[in-house]
Every structure is written in C-alpha cells, then in structure tokens.
Image (cartoon, rainbow, N blue to C red; front, side, top):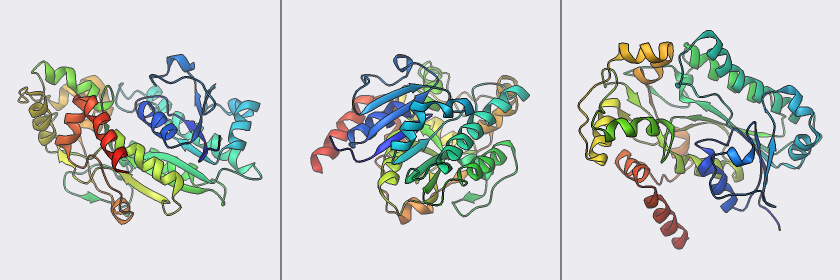
Length: 330
C-alpha cells in the first residue's frame, strides 16, 4: 500500500491523540506512536497494531531512547514528525518538583528529537511542534495574535524555550509551531473535569468570570495538524484557537444551557489557589487570543461557535454524524 506520509508521533497518546490518531489514519498516513505506556493502555479505542499503525514503548524525553535502533529507523523512514509531548499543566500544585517535570517533559523531548533529526542525511520534511497560548502571558484587556510578543510568567518563558528548541531543526525541515488554546472535546480535557460538577448543578464561573477563554474543539485541532502536514504554506507559528473566544462567565452560562443545569455558583479564586497553588493562574487569568494565520490560510472551522462545540462534546454521536455529512459531500 502507498501511504500519503509516514509519520512519527510523540505525545499523541492522550486526549488529543484519541482523535488525532484515527483522523490521520483515515487520511491515509502510516503512523508510529512513541509512548512510555504499552499500547493496550493508550486511550485510543478500537485500534490495533497493523501495517499502518505501529507503537514503540519508549520515553521520548530520554536521550537514551534515541539510541534505540527501532526508534532511529522509524525516524529515518518518517516524512513528518508531530511532537505534542508535555506533562499536563493544571492538574497538580505547582511545586518546584512539578514545575521541573512540566518543563523537562517538553524541552527534553523536543531537544532530543531535533538533535536526532540534525544528525540525519535526509531528515523528515516537516516538524509540527506544540506550544501553547500561554506564550503571551495573561490579560483581561489585550488582544493577542501570532505577531504579539511573549509574556514574562512561567508559562510564557517555558513556551519561549520550547519554541526555541524546536527552531534548531534542520534547515531542510519545515517547522510549524502550534500555540494551542484550551482544547474541548468529549470524554476528557478541561471539559471532562467540569462536566460532573455542572451536571450536579454545582457549576459556575471560576474567579471573577471576566477572564478570557480562548478555546478550540479537538476535531478542528486535528484538522489543523492534518492540513499542516501536507501543505507547505503552513509554516512558522499558528494560534490554534476558535475564532470566537468567550469570557469564563459566558462559558459557564453556555455550558449550563447545554446541560440544562444552573450555572450560578462561583468558584472563588482563593479556593482554587489552595488546590493548585500557582497553577491556578491558568484558570483565574486568561487571554484573548485570535489567529490571523488561520484566517489568511482560509481554514474552515467545523466548530467556530462555543454552543455547537459544547453540544457535540456532550453528545459525541453528533460529531460522528457531522463527519459523515462532510465525507458524503466531498
């Protein structure tokens, strides 16, 4: 069988990977997943090892892993690399130990794969590397686009280092850095933590409710990655965010409407800080991020509006129905 591309995937075994892996397989690509977990423990339902899907149980953040002959062979055969590796940001208190884990999981993997690529006679033609809208810092008033400068807090400095590490790729490799917003989708992610609270009628805005939420539906993120692989015009930095960010208060109201539950109870900032420490700033402080690049590239969002996105996230069968309609019209 002739595949469109042979791809090496790092950090694609979690919430985003659940949809990205089958999405890329359906596009006709051959994939090799690198993960510390055995394949049977990955959250990718209904898939098994086959001619177009391989898995190597290795830690991509370890330099020793990149001495493995199977990994080096997979990289040698790859036309493209997708690197989404990173320890979750807002799930634990930001202790010094956890902050080091957050940083090392991103920087060590990116440095390792880039170093391996630079040592090849013919490196992969494209590297898609994750970053985050945390690059811009936080603000209630400013609008951030791809042209905006970086912020100065921990996340902004981490994203800057992360992007600089990716930029050391070989000259012949096209680089696309995706600054990802809050990813919404069924059965996980930020929404997965909110749904049980809202369904119990205890949901509401966090903090003062005025902070911005720049979000993207997982299906659109997967399509951004897919188009970036095959189209040379996709290069540089792209903000992966839907065109209509919302305030935390509007998000809570819309989610309550979708679930037909009240959304009146606020979660005070001090309580969240007690739980997450400095990591609470991810939720308490936001940023209004938009993408000039996606507009220029004429990217068509399937879920540009929050209401539609939340309806589909709460009813996953609607996503399958929408995909079927799109496929039938192509």
